[in-house]
Length: 133
Image 1 (cartoon, one colour):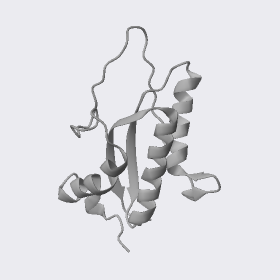
Image 2 (cartoon, one colour):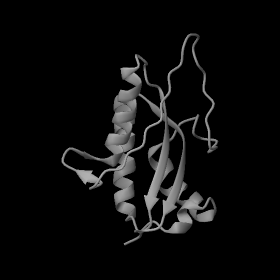
Image 3 (spheres, one colour):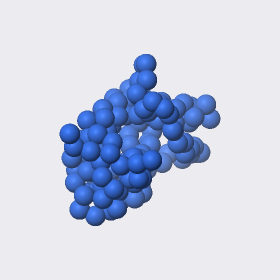
């Protein structure tokens, strides 16, 4: 079984392969295409709302969902509770060394499904890998 390794989070060749193989499989749009650490997008006149949220949950998979569902739905909810219409999200992945690729893929697939359901686009992100505890 293939697993996430520390080198997948160092910004080199392995990071690029992880992005190409998994992340871009589920998140594809014109704003994400440049693969920068930020995104530029048009804004209408008026006010813009934004938020940052992080999730740590044990177990990663639980009845009714997984951390990917929680991340997208929770962040969208935070924006909606501010009276905003969510449009764009950033995706920060802090992966533990040894995470099976199939679990990563399930989480990313769920995030993609929830983003589509909420009518938001994931337009930028960052991935880091931490040592297994």
